[in-house]
Length: 382
Image 1 (cartoon, rainbow, N blue to C red):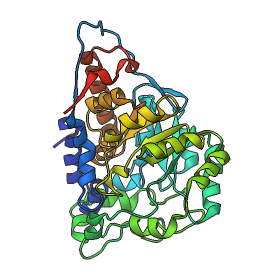
Image 2 (image 1 turned 135 degrees about the horizontal axis):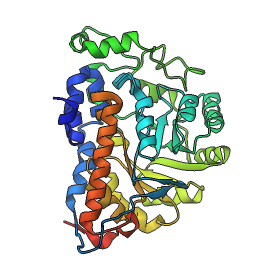
Image 3 (image 1 turned 60 degrees about the vertical axis):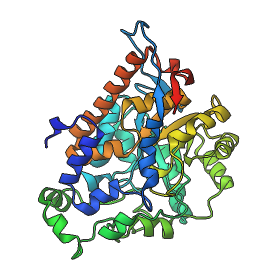
């Protein structure tokens, strides 16, 4: 299977599975408990049908939208995700370059494998930083100040990782960051020599946004669950979120909002956006999908705050359904991580291009000339 054989996200998933050692692949692909919510994140779109209009004169359409004060070229962006240089040696650098070419938001995680400063200098298109609140208050303050100095456009506070989800695939494979080669995993690494050579002989793996304050994850191998459970601040509450917003002073997004009540509170504390997200099904299994929640959240706070449908997007028509239901834009992580793992920057470029083409084609077939024309009259729930 080659890059040119990949025509959709699932194709890239299959190629990524071939090219990654199993502990690394299952870290990307896995989710919490029985992985019901992970599956629901995508299947929920199947419960809703599009109702197209015709003869609308769609030779020229406008795919742009404005998210957190920035006009982007399409209503889909690349969510911040951790540990990207484990998946491919180009890591965040590849994803950032693609986001810039497509003029859309790009985010890096607190657990990114390139620094805030490097990303800030590398791209001119909108960039966000996903902030995890650590027990180490000096680390939290350092990351916010570094984002200011590097001219990041938004901070996205992750609010759904008070404790780690039960990711049983990671328990079975023994995945850690950095990777720990164990008797049970060494065969999988040994049968993927290209990955091993890149990991061992290219730039040393590190988490530069954390390493100034903590050694875990860079010099000390830990599971993601252990990291979340021991390093993150479980006392985080709305008062703390509001204080971070005030300290940052710019565009501020809450990632992990799922309820109408929390969406209203996000407006009250001055957030400018929410990512309606369940962390890709990696946290609370059995929770609703983001798409399931968009309509009622939009009815409650639409027009007061940007609403981003984050998770489960695999097709351009999924984006159209979310926008018609009331979302400002969509975002996703796995959709580009599979492509990154499969083929580096060319893979990410190809999958984002495919999704952009699907959104454009879908808009024309729906009879809309701008994303603003999508509304709930074009949807029917089964």
